[in-house]
Length: 307
Image (cartoon, rainbow, N blue to C red; front, top):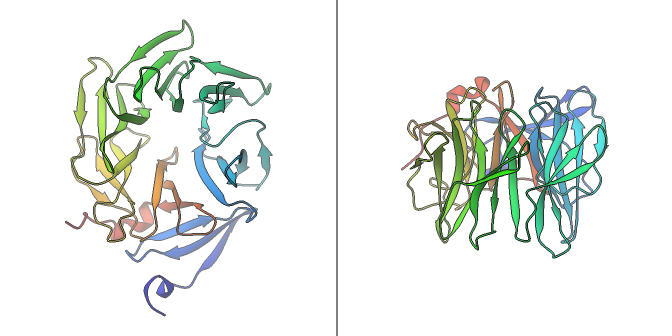
């Protein structure tokens, strides 16, 4: 066997009723594939509950059929969530989900779903496209991107008084915003042109925006470590296939380290609440699947990027 087929033999680990298929990247790191039902075309990791015990999984079947369910990582129990698309994010108390829902005009709005009552409330509704929302630590302030001015900019909305604030004003695409654990910063990625994306940071006290990556490749999907000192993101800077791998960097954009090394596309990385794992989506399987990598056991294979 050669190439990808020459990876170490695959084994399966069982965490109660959830199976993990383990293999080794060409770069050397051990990666776990979370087994899901094979009857959908794509599966998408959306988020983890604050206790790390429940995974939100979005799925797609054909172009117009999507859905979402919650997977208990200890028992394997599954809870289907009606009327929600993929892209859900847990609230800090684990009682609600942020998501997008289609509107009557064919666009999307941010929706908050109560896991106890089943009620859905729209957040800062508008007749434009609204996407990719997440919470501040208090669960009251929400950050998202919106096309309400014609381009995709970063906004926050405070539920208590309806205060809306625009943080970026860029004639392009700003998205994937996320508060730091102490709410002092907002991460996001900006599309400079074509496939040129970079990671940026906003200081919430001053509104100052700084650029963390500066590469003429795709640098995106940034997310915080639980302690706010490390950023995980996806980049295709060193992959001959042109598809992104998962990387880590310090909050100042330095000390970049490559985590995955695979010719297939890896995207949407996210730390587990305890900082032990990084979860991500990958096209290395059919259907597109959800993976995780344990950082401590893979320290030897984490390396500086080539080039």
